[in-house]
Amino acid sequence: AKDDAFAGSSVLVASNPVDDEIPLSYDACSRHKRQFEFNPCLPHTLIYAHALDGGDPTNDPVLVVDEDKQYTFRDALYSQDIITADDSNLSLQDPVELCRLEWRYDDIDFTQSGTILIDEYRWSDRMERKWKLSSASSTKTLLWERSWEDRYGSPGTPVRKRGENGKYFIREPTPGKIFLKGAGASPLGDRPFLDSMDLET
Image (tube, rainbow, N blue to C red; front, side, top):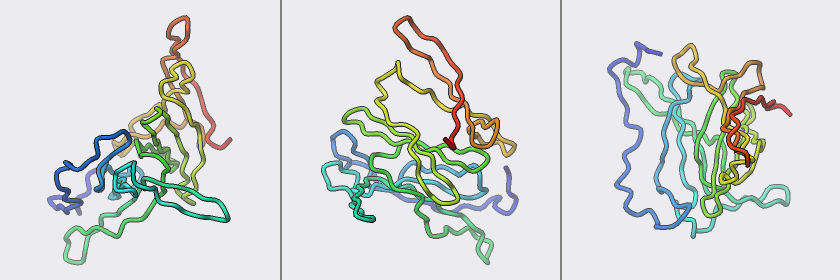
Protein backbone atom coordinates (compact mmCIF):
# COMPACT_ATOMS: atom_id res chain seq x y z
CA ALA A 1 0.00 0.00 0.00
CA LYS A 2 1.15 3.52 -0.77
CA ASP A 3 2.48 5.53 2.17
CA ASP A 4 2.64 9.28 1.44
CA ALA A 5 5.10 9.76 4.32
CA PHE A 6 7.65 7.71 2.36
CA ALA A 7 6.86 9.10 -1.09
CA GLY A 8 9.98 10.24 -2.93
CA SER A 9 12.27 9.05 -0.13
CA SER A 10 14.93 6.36 -0.24
CA VAL A 11 17.43 4.74 2.08
CA LEU A 12 20.46 2.58 1.34
CA VAL A 13 19.73 -0.92 2.60
CA ALA A 14 22.94 -2.67 1.52
CA SER A 15 25.92 -2.13 -0.77
CA ASN A 16 27.50 -5.49 -1.49
CA PRO A 17 30.57 -6.10 -3.64
CA VAL A 18 30.53 -8.53 -6.55
CA ASP A 19 30.10 -12.06 -5.24
CA ASP A 20 33.17 -13.51 -6.93
CA GLU A 21 34.37 -15.22 -3.76
CA ILE A 22 31.54 -17.73 -3.36
CA PRO A 23 33.16 -21.18 -3.00
CA LEU A 24 32.58 -23.57 -5.88
CA SER A 25 30.87 -26.18 -3.74
CA TYR A 26 27.37 -27.31 -2.85
CA ASP A 27 25.60 -25.37 -0.10
CA ALA A 28 27.86 -22.33 -0.60
CA CYS A 29 26.31 -18.86 -0.72
CA SER A 30 27.17 -15.18 -0.49
CA ARG A 31 28.95 -14.07 2.69
CA HIS A 32 26.97 -10.82 2.54
CA LYS A 33 23.37 -10.05 3.45
CA ARG A 34 21.10 -11.62 0.84
CA GLN A 35 17.52 -12.34 -0.28
CA PHE A 36 15.94 -9.08 0.83
CA GLU A 37 12.17 -8.75 0.83
CA PHE A 38 9.47 -6.86 2.70
CA ASN A 39 7.40 -8.40 5.47
CA PRO A 40 3.85 -8.28 4.04
CA CYS A 41 2.31 -8.11 7.54
CA LEU A 42 4.12 -4.88 8.44
CA PRO A 43 4.28 -1.61 6.49
CA HIS A 44 8.04 -0.94 6.38
CA THR A 45 9.96 -3.97 7.60
CA LEU A 46 12.66 -5.83 5.68
CA ILE A 47 13.51 -9.52 5.93
CA TYR A 48 16.91 -10.85 4.88
CA ALA A 49 19.29 -13.77 5.41
CA HIS A 50 22.96 -13.74 6.38
CA ALA A 51 25.40 -16.67 6.47
CA LEU A 52 26.91 -17.36 9.88
CA ASP A 53 29.69 -19.50 8.40
CA GLY A 54 30.87 -16.94 5.85
CA GLY A 55 28.90 -18.73 3.13
CA ASP A 56 31.44 -21.56 2.98
CA PRO A 57 30.13 -25.03 3.94
CA THR A 58 33.70 -26.19 4.67
CA ASN A 59 33.83 -23.72 7.58
CA ASP A 60 32.57 -24.83 10.97
CA PRO A 61 28.99 -23.80 11.72
CA VAL A 62 28.14 -21.67 14.72
CA LEU A 63 27.80 -23.89 17.78
CA VAL A 64 25.26 -23.08 20.49
CA VAL A 65 24.92 -25.03 23.71
CA ASP A 66 21.56 -24.81 25.46
CA GLU A 67 20.66 -26.93 28.49
CA ASP A 68 23.28 -29.60 27.70
CA LYS A 69 22.13 -29.78 24.06
CA GLN A 70 24.29 -28.67 21.15
CA TYR A 71 22.91 -26.95 18.07
CA THR A 72 24.76 -25.90 14.92
CA PHE A 73 23.69 -23.07 12.62
CA ARG A 74 24.84 -21.87 9.21
CA ASP A 75 22.27 -19.17 8.38
CA ALA A 76 20.30 -16.58 10.29
CA LEU A 77 17.19 -14.64 9.32
CA TYR A 78 16.80 -11.00 10.31
CA SER A 79 14.08 -8.37 10.46
CA GLN A 80 14.87 -4.67 10.05
CA ASP A 81 12.47 -1.72 10.33
CA ILE A 82 12.60 1.40 8.18
CA ILE A 83 11.44 4.52 9.99
CA THR A 84 11.13 8.25 9.33
CA ALA A 85 13.73 10.23 11.26
CA ASP A 86 13.16 13.67 12.80
CA ASP A 87 14.42 15.36 9.64
CA SER A 88 11.88 13.38 7.57
CA ASN A 89 14.64 11.23 6.06
CA LEU A 90 14.36 7.47 6.14
CA SER A 91 16.48 5.53 8.60
CA LEU A 92 17.23 1.85 9.17
CA GLN A 93 16.75 0.51 12.67
CA ASP A 94 19.12 -2.11 14.08
CA PRO A 95 18.32 -5.59 12.74
CA VAL A 96 16.59 -8.13 14.96
CA GLU A 97 17.34 -11.82 14.62
CA LEU A 98 14.22 -13.84 13.83
CA CYS A 99 15.77 -17.29 13.92
CA ARG A 100 18.81 -19.38 13.07
CA LEU A 101 18.90 -22.31 10.64
CA GLU A 102 21.07 -25.40 10.57
CA TRP A 103 21.03 -25.48 6.76
CA ARG A 104 20.73 -22.76 4.09
CA TYR A 105 17.79 -20.40 4.10
CA ASP A 106 15.57 -20.80 1.03
CA ASP A 107 12.24 -18.99 1.34
CA ILE A 108 9.71 -17.41 3.67
CA ASP A 109 5.90 -17.07 3.63
CA PHE A 110 3.38 -15.40 5.92
CA THR A 111 -0.23 -15.83 6.90
CA GLN A 112 -2.31 -12.75 7.60
CA SER A 113 -2.70 -13.88 11.20
CA GLY A 114 1.07 -13.53 11.63
CA THR A 115 2.34 -17.11 11.36
CA ILE A 116 5.62 -17.43 9.43
CA LEU A 117 6.70 -20.47 7.39
CA ILE A 118 10.42 -20.78 6.64
CA ASP A 119 12.17 -23.17 4.24
CA GLU A 120 15.77 -24.33 4.52
CA TYR A 121 17.71 -26.80 2.37
CA ARG A 122 20.86 -28.88 2.24
CA TRP A 123 21.94 -29.32 -1.37
CA SER A 124 24.53 -32.03 -0.72
CA ASP A 125 21.83 -34.67 -0.12
CA ARG A 126 18.77 -32.81 -1.53
CA MET A 127 17.07 -32.42 1.85
CA GLU A 128 14.62 -29.69 2.80
CA ARG A 129 12.80 -28.59 5.93
CA LYS A 130 9.77 -26.39 6.51
CA TRP A 131 9.41 -24.63 9.84
CA LYS A 132 6.58 -22.75 11.50
CA LEU A 133 7.80 -19.66 13.33
CA SER A 134 5.61 -17.97 15.87
CA SER A 135 5.88 -14.20 15.44
CA ALA A 136 5.05 -13.76 19.11
CA SER A 137 7.71 -16.02 20.63
CA SER A 138 10.17 -16.72 17.77
CA THR A 139 9.75 -20.42 18.55
CA LYS A 140 10.37 -22.79 15.61
CA THR A 141 8.26 -25.90 15.06
CA LEU A 142 9.27 -28.43 12.40
CA LEU A 143 6.48 -29.17 9.92
CA TRP A 144 8.43 -31.60 7.75
CA GLU A 145 11.90 -32.77 6.75
CA ARG A 146 12.20 -34.63 3.48
CA SER A 147 14.07 -35.17 0.24
CA TRP A 148 12.81 -32.87 -2.49
CA GLU A 149 13.59 -35.65 -4.98
CA ASP A 150 10.81 -37.77 -3.42
CA ARG A 151 8.00 -36.61 -5.71
CA TYR A 152 5.65 -39.37 -4.55
CA GLY A 153 5.86 -38.20 -0.94
CA SER A 154 5.61 -34.47 -1.61
CA PRO A 155 3.17 -32.81 0.84
CA GLY A 156 2.57 -29.95 -1.62
CA THR A 157 3.10 -26.22 -1.40
CA PRO A 158 0.97 -23.65 0.45
CA VAL A 159 -1.81 -21.97 -1.52
CA ARG A 160 -1.39 -18.19 -1.57
CA LYS A 161 -3.69 -15.25 -2.20
CA ARG A 162 -3.41 -11.50 -2.54
CA GLY A 163 -4.32 -9.65 0.66
CA GLU A 164 -6.13 -6.35 1.04
CA ASN A 165 -2.79 -4.52 1.12
CA GLY A 166 -1.90 -5.95 -2.31
CA LYS A 167 0.72 -8.35 -0.93
CA TYR A 168 0.58 -12.13 -1.06
CA PHE A 169 -0.13 -14.35 1.94
CA ILE A 170 -0.67 -18.05 2.56
CA ARG A 171 -4.39 -18.69 2.27
CA GLU A 172 -5.79 -19.37 5.74
CA PRO A 173 -9.49 -20.38 5.77
CA THR A 174 -9.41 -20.35 9.57
CA PRO A 175 -6.54 -19.22 11.85
CA GLY A 176 -3.93 -21.96 12.05
CA LYS A 177 -5.17 -23.95 9.05
CA ILE A 178 -3.75 -23.72 5.51
CA PHE A 179 -4.23 -25.38 2.12
CA LEU A 180 -1.52 -27.34 0.28
CA LYS A 181 -1.56 -28.11 -3.43
CA GLY A 182 0.60 -30.47 -5.43
CA ALA A 183 0.99 -32.51 -8.60
CA GLY A 184 0.30 -35.76 -6.74
CA ALA A 185 2.96 -37.82 -8.49
CA SER A 186 2.39 -41.58 -8.29
CA PRO A 187 3.38 -44.78 -10.13
CA LEU A 188 0.14 -44.40 -12.09
CA GLY A 189 0.83 -40.83 -13.11
CA ASP A 190 0.07 -37.45 -11.61
CA ARG A 191 -3.01 -37.05 -9.42
CA PRO A 192 -3.23 -33.33 -8.60
CA PHE A 193 -4.48 -32.70 -5.08
CA LEU A 194 -5.63 -30.02 -2.67
CA ASP A 195 -5.05 -30.80 0.99
CA SER A 196 -5.46 -28.98 4.29
CA MET A 197 -2.96 -28.76 7.14
CA ASP A 198 -3.48 -27.70 10.74
CA LEU A 199 -0.40 -25.76 11.85
CA GLU A 200 -1.35 -26.15 15.51
CA THR A 201 -1.14 -29.97 15.59
